Amino acid sequence: MKIGVIGSGGIGGTVGTLWAKAGHEVLFSSRNPEKLATLVADAGNNAKAGTIADAAQFADIIFLAVYYWTTDEAIASAGKLAGKIIIDATNPYIRNNAGEVQRVPNVSSALELAKKLPQSKIVKAYNTLPTRIFAEEHHLPNPYTVFYCGDDTGAKSTVSQLITDSGFAGIDTGKISNVINQEPGGLLYNKPLTMDAARELLASI
Ligand SMILES: NC(=O)c1ccc[n+]([C@@H]2O[C@H](COP(=O)([O-])OP(=O)(O)OC[C@H]3O[C@@H](n4cnc5c(N)ncnc54)[C@H](OP(=O)(O)O)[C@@H]3O)[C@@H](O)[C@H]2O)c1
Image (cartoon, rainbow, N blue to C red; front, side, top):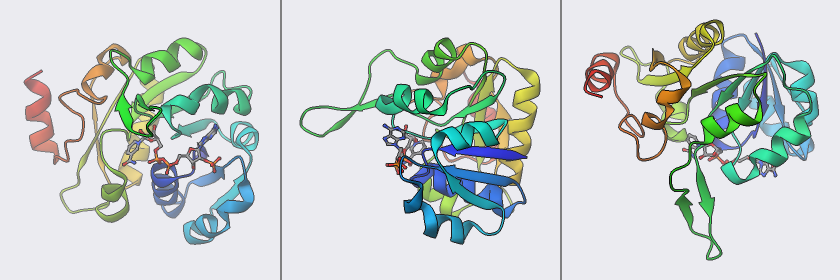
């Protein structure tokens, strides 16, 4: 598959590298693509770098991994995203004047994104676990669960395959209206669980 990564930092760079190494074509984007030379070299022959607009033009699947407060700027830089699958890894945190990062109360970044991009297929995924787990604990014999949700069945099936390819096990948590369980403060957030434990937890909601 062709994947455009918007926000090629900790989470975007790490998950994009797993996909490139699994054989997918990955375009890592940045406001300064020349900064991505090491990332691209480490990700191998299936990876390249470009602008945010290049990522949107190149790919049918976008991995959105920018800070919540830069989402509007990132999607404006992307241009046309209609019809594309957007995997939303963002979490609704904001930096206050003292430089501290705090959860934005009563907000879902995925529900906001779905309103902003009604013609895109939003799937929330990869936001519940820290970057370190994606970097160091992929492809375990009993893999960790990556929860995902969204309203488009075909898009979710694609994302489920990408989760498997990245070395994790996907569990569908339902419609995008369920996303609050997956975002900060939700029961499924920051829970590194294998499939059995994850299913048990999900059943308790
Ligand atoms: N850290 C984690 O463990 C983790 C886990 C899951 C999800 N998340 C979520 O994933 C998102 C990214 O977190 P991160 O830890 O990967 O952050 P990060 O390493 O700081 O990367 C953020 C990326 O956002 C891009 N960016 C910054 N301002 C931008 C703008 N105005 N327009 C477009 N792109 C911009 C930067 O790209 P350039 O400067 O190259 O343009 C940078 O590569 C956040 O929403 C976070 O909550 C984080």
